[in-house]
Length: 249
Image (cartoon, rainbow, N blue to C red; front, side, top):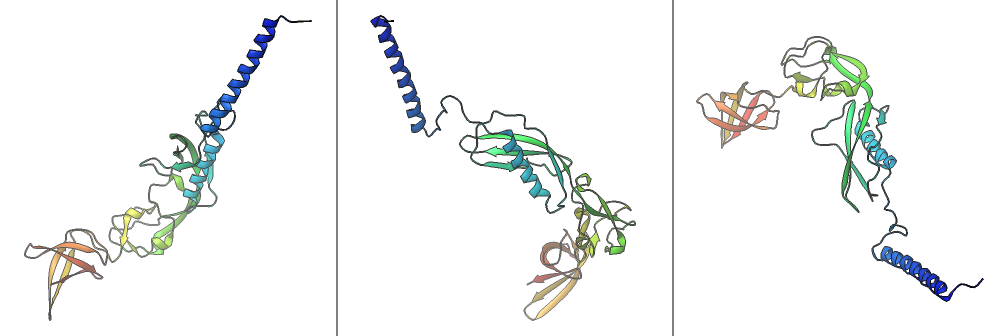
């Protein structure tokens, strides 16, 4: 069957037009560093990859507390984010580890975007509570502590999980029986508190003068603190063990 010459000519032009468009698309992909086929569809970051990055980040955060942590990631809701060269997980400002936690995952190349993923944490471990009421200012001994097992994520911030970091410290305030021991409730036994009486030692060239004073701030041995002398003058000195503040004249 013979086709009219004008139909043959149209087929010839259509074929060459398609070849030209295909060649142009490949050329654009090459010039702009895109993979072949990118002109048809842009690659997206997989939710599984984002979730895995967030989970690995959380596992590193809880590793110092327990090796038996259970982390359950919620599904990533956004599945149309551009593919990323390197995902960077982070904790949002003011966030802390807790039973329900939010992790941010940021991308900076080739495009900037941020997504937030939620997760459930269960971190079993040992923590310590007061076995009896501990008065303010008392040095804590092992007899003052009871160990407990439980999910560390349910504890108040700063709860202590190492007895060695507690024994020998001094209670800043009263700690009730059964109350978890928190770092903020402890201070070095050699430390002093604001308002506490101290002995001021002033050393000069060939002489030493001592007098009583009052600490104007908390401090541990080696720290420079301000004290008020009996005459009302405010001076600065280095806190020494035993509640002495040394001034060099």
